Picture 1 (cartoon, rainbow, N blue to C red):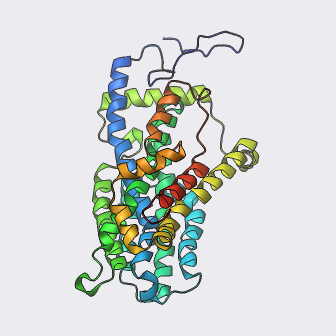
Picture 2 (picture 1 turned 90 degrees about the horizontal axis):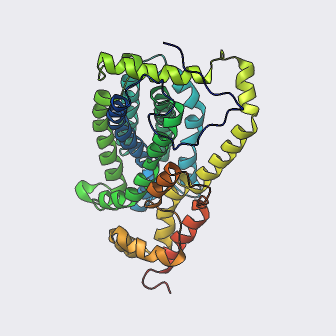
Picture 3 (picture 1 turned 120 degrees about the horizontal axis):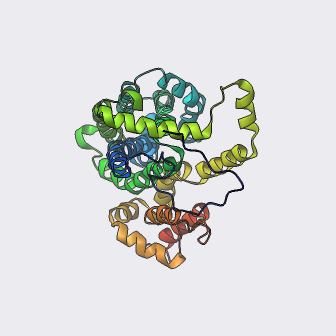
Amino acid sequence: MSKSRSPSPTTATPVRSASDTDHQPSDVDAVALRTLTRKIDLRIIPLFIFLYTITFLDRVNIGNARLWHLEADLGMAGYDYNLAVLVFYIPYMLLEIPSNMLLNRLKPRYYIASLVFLWGLTITLAGFSTRFAHLLAARVLLGVFEAGMFPGCLFLLATWYPRHALLTRTALFLLANDIAGSVSGLLGAGLGALDGVRAASGWRWIFWLEGAFTCAAALLALRYVPDFPHREPFLADAERALWLARLEHDARSLGHEPMTPRRVLRALRDARSLAGGVLYLRRLASRPYSISVFTPTSAHLWLGPAQVQSAVDARAHRVGRRVRPCRCRFGPHEAPRRLLSRRLRDEHRRPAPRHGADGRRAARHCLDCQPGRR
């Protein structure tokens, strides 16, 4: 059997829509490959979305906890809350790359499950804080343990999928941000309503119950987080051979060069890498992290405690009716359309939504439309 050869640069080739069976050797059974791809997708993607949703919820629950006597109980004043938010990101940024280097040497399911359990335990213990210093220590440890989750999931996705299939799976994985943002306020309001039960403030119940749920989710991660493809037990031998052949074909078409410090520096100096980094930092600054930890406070000051509670208890369809007049072009409903537009290759006809500015405009409109704020 002769190896497939890529077309020369001067050869015209018809344009095709991307699918999971593209870029494959000619003798591969397309039906079997589609079935196997669906099996792997159902095993990996929902689990990673679930785990990253928990990661995001535990990261930003301090914003909801602030509304339930957090600062008063711990004697916080001035910029103490801002400092508690900030210290999380110092170890988070420093440990992402070392964490992936460690993940590459360990079994992913044990490593990921350990991280999930440890940050869940940290959140739970944070509920027993009696001083501001205790909260700071918990936030630092939370940054240490959560640092490996996001890059680790992306690394595992990259080991499981060829290049043309990876983009769609990564986009689906990132939907966890929108899912978590949609439920964090409702969850915080529900758990905070336990304020006073057993003489404990609402913020303690938020930390205790969310942390306990995360610790339980670690058992799910221990059972279902996949290993690397060449040693994953949930694949039969024939399925593993077929999938590894697909990955090998993709790697062969890309070529391989040894990783050297010079190549790393060249990648860091690449204009596309720098532009992507700047855009990602802008996204972090506007949405979802900064808005998620400060919006509860802003709404509390703008509407007052009773109105915040009623606004949170109002269902999502009320928010949809309030947002529609300002023509917001981004929301949880927009992500599937963006995926579909990418699938149909019409992204050039539909400009990407400026979700940062429109999201802030929509949030302000929601506040302005509340009763008594005319």
